[in-house]
Length: 68
Image (cartoon, rainbow, N blue to C red):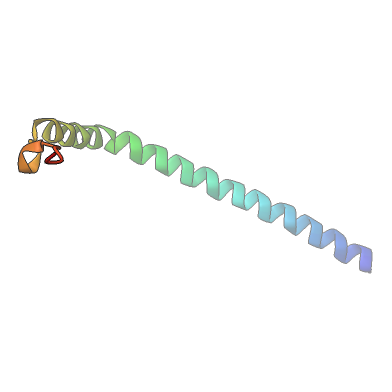
């Protein structure tokens, strides 16, 4: 009787591990799909931010003199 219980518990652990693997695979597929769908718009936003940073002028004149 005890051996049968051990066998049932072991098989359920393996089943749980397989379920976690399937969940992780599903999350990966959804994440890849989202990146493929949103990738171009995200890249455009990064390009806009880069352009704004490059064209910005430092506040206060940008000097760094210590007054000595």
